[in-house]
Image (cartoon, rainbow over all chains, first blue to last red):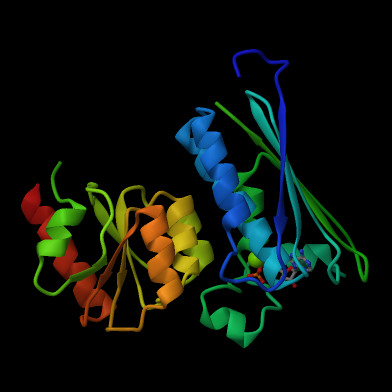
Length: 144
Length: 113
Ligand SMILES: Nc1ncnc2c1ncn2[C@@H]1O[C@H](COP(=O)(O)OP(=O)(O)O)[C@@H](O)[C@H]1O
Ligand SMILES: [Mg+2]
């Protein structure tokens, strides 16, 4: 990807309630970014942000889709689900706030740090949601 | 290479359940909250947890952590073993509690320097 015009689009499906395969989309994207030669800091930030977003689709929605548009200097991510939606986005963004069940907490999720982590490790994020319709999370990771 | 995954396998209190590549281990990170581990674990550290399930392997893979220690002789799921084999991540088990396991590895790392 030597030329700035070059871009690549990939998409992954995230299955509902599948804790066995959860993280596969983020893992596949991370491997691709590594192969494309992105710096380790870019790969790390992207891995953290997509994993948190992917887990939210597994835990709080019924799975969804991860789409990435990759150019040499940015990774644009869009995570879409048709889950229950979020009624109060500001509250959801608060560190420590979580509606995760006890069963989910018992396996190490539900710290209420996912959305704050995404905000911290991405260069730009936007979360839009409609109750009963679904949630779309967009994030940009700039490289270098 | 100072202290490595192979040296950890040689410590008497630790049992290498799944072996991966030889890799340096420079520090120890202890935590069971996956959001903290994925964002705060240092590179090249060994991660000590009491959770023997497959989601730990996903987190280790995403952060390139070479090794997971499951402390307190907690059970390790077969899915975790299979995923670790696939990803080339070491799994060690130990009867030691988290703090003592961390201390033992920390001392071994310091000794090797
Ligand atoms: N895709 C989603 N669909 C519905 N609700 C969501 C989604 N993502 C996040 N949320 C809500 O926002 C809260 C905070 O999310 P997050 O910061 O990732 O913490 P956690 O996942 O640990 O609960 C969740 O507990 C949930 O109520
Ligand atoms: Mg979350």
